[in-house]
Amino acid sequence: MVYIAYAPVYKLSLPTGPNGEPHRFPMLKYELIPEQLLYEGTCTDENFFAPSPVDDHWVLGVHAPEYVHQLKALTVPAQMVRRIGFPLSPELIEREWIITQGTIDCALLAMKQGCAMNVAGGTHHAYPDRGEGFCLLNDVGVASHFLLETGRAKRILVIDLDVHQGNGTAVMFQGEDRVFTFSMHGKDNYPLKKEQSDLDIAFPTGTADDIYLTTLYETLPRLIDQHQPDFLFYVAGVDIVATDRLGKLAVSREGCRQRDQFVFDKAIEYGLPIVVSMGGGYSPRIADIVEAHCNTFRVAVGKFS
Image 1 (cartoon, rainbow, N blue to C red):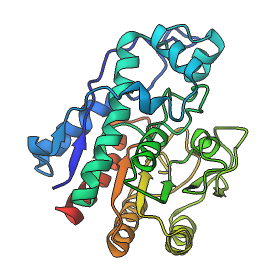
Image 2 (cartoon, rainbow, N blue to C red):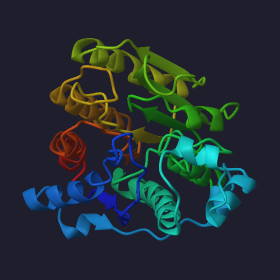
Image 3 (cartoon, rainbow, N blue to C red):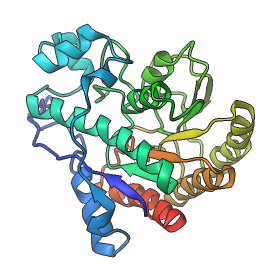
Image 4 (cartoon, rainbow, N blue to C red):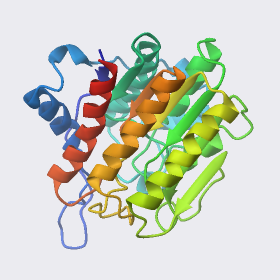
């Protein structure tokens, strides 16, 4: 069975744009994805579980104490709040702590079941000492630290296929040889200043299925052979699809599904547990976002059940 972590979705008071309309941030997808998976019969209630908030001990393993205190006390400087992208609240902070524990729980479940997934997470823009890009805590970073410190993993490969570079994760594990950070992203979009992952592949605007998938097919097996990980984290953003308003790539929804299928196939072939964090998706139609994300869950359930 594929277990799926689910965190509560709170109503956010988002800042408004120049015409008074609220900025669009697709929080709704976090509610609709489980509903769709249940409705179509891909999942049952038994697949889903609700994590508790993560213990600060694990958060502080990768995040600076001052930053963690600012988050919990809601004293984050205004400039950083603007970079994060939405106003902070006690409910939002609690949700972030729950999401992060969800990725840790998924790691433990994946060791038994092969794969576990988080209907959230992939918060790869969170640096050790600051947040940005809708990311407060780095869930994959905290969970990687947990696995290493408890001796449950010795070498980790982070496969970040969100269209935006995993800049916070890259910085978090620079100098940590046990974690290899691999980011395949768009060259011409956020963040403007890219960090240095262990391997970065940046695609020009308009890159479509053939080049994107061929590059992944050639790269991922080589990285597994070279790094010899015993655990995989997969940030499965669907903002690579052509309909995405922020992504700037031109991968089809089917190409995105084939990407997911290949990553799961390699995990199975090499016998590696894999945890999926959802990452981004910003198509104008919420149905396009939900369908692309649901494909990731459908493929996983089909291969690991």
